[in-house]
Image (cartoon, rainbow, N blue to C red; front, side, top):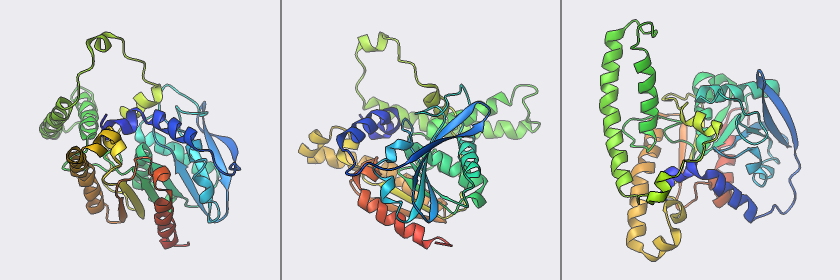
Length: 340
């Protein structure tokens, strides 16, 4: 299983295994409240306490705020730490809609306003990078900084040349929206410009789909029996988030972006088998660097306010696999912000 898809498809399984593997030495003290962000939609907000600058933690797709039960107490001596469980997951409401990146970003802003937080720093893991970029690009005055933990991929910063595995999905979503505008009354009076944009988008999407085709060729075919079985229903939150990706290209706030690069062998496939085959491990790492590394370089170049850190052989769940490294980089970044 390639990490590029397992990060998001099976993240809940990874999280459950990781959390169950180690109990905190001292049970974390926290309180929970529910904040209304939209009619009939309430989000779970965990408050671990602490003093200092407010720091809001956002979990990856498939996880809730409690994923930080062990990590958050390490931050409370310097910061007041909160966690938000996004809509569709955990104890938060599960509405039928409202999962676009900007809507989820609005949810975060609603919590910030409800708690009267003064320019907090937002930290997000994995897919939470889309919410960070939504807030930072649209309302940068609301936050003092953003911390991306293995979260600054194409759903957080789009660069067509990066070759990120999810570019094809982001471009297909944009293509669908523009095709709808071709319909009479679709809302775009500049039809000539719209057609030119679509033609350019078709060429880009074709290239990305061919790259994906090559990637899929290297994966084993599912057994015929499995192919005939009905596919399990995808939770509304996951389906909505995948269908609500947006392009972010300008994020004018101080940023710390931490990548696992190259990733731990277990993230790249069968870690035990790769460890026994140095040549295969080298190929897997080279492929990871070619893809994830290109995205990291694109983020570093395209976002001048970002400090990019690469931690070799870390797991995608980097705040667990490399806790000390993450805490060190976070503390240094937070100390550098105005008003620290």
